[in-house]
Amino acid sequence: KAGVTQTPRYLIKTRGQQVTLSCSPISGHRSVSWYQQTPGQGLQFLFEYFSETQRNKGNFPGRFSGRQFSNSRSEMNVSTLELGDSALYLCASSLDRTAYEQYFGPGTRLTVT
Amino acid sequence: AQSVTQLDSHVSVSEGTPVLLRCNYSSSYSPSLFWYVQHPNKGLQLLLKYTSAATLVKGINGFEAEFKKSETSFHLTKPSAHMSDAAEYFCVVSDWDTGNQFYFGTGTSLTVIP
Image (cartoon, rainbow over the protein chains, first blue to last red):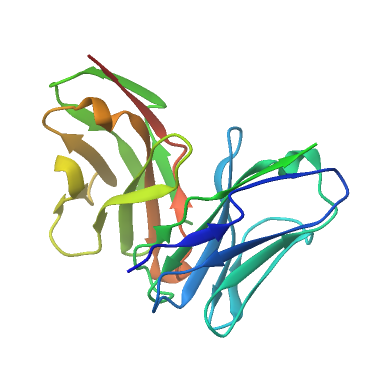
């Protein structure tokens, strides 16, 4: 099976712009989670989607949003970008929304200038 | 509330010597525990998982971990380090109370000296 794919892999944006990141889970996986990884804060949970519904949300401002489509693909959107949003954004998929293991994609490196 | 403490931010070992990466967790219920590895500029790869079966868990690349409920620990070990083991290692806790939400430790950077 193909693994989790994320597009784009690298992105450079300027402050105030918005960005959309895409994640395609492993075939058959219905849960998609998003994480932000920075050197200072480590890995932080953004949100989780299951069957097109947001089931869990981390402690991030409303500028961060996401959605999941009927084919389980997911997008996350960040509006009004700030310098502090520069990070590696990781997507993970799992079979179900129980405590199964999650499989991570390679990430999207976002740089905000 | 769930949380994970990785007791060492950096561990350095010589090639061929044992590796020990320490992890303590806090969980309200019966946790699932995982170790993930991240090589530079790569995503996270699952090394092994504990989900209330055998307390000694074997993973990929010769790694194993032992779940000790009395000590709330889940330390990662490997008998003999290889140069390719140099990476960042993350301990993760999850349980039914939070569904699929993972709580990550701050990571341990492993250096392997030739």
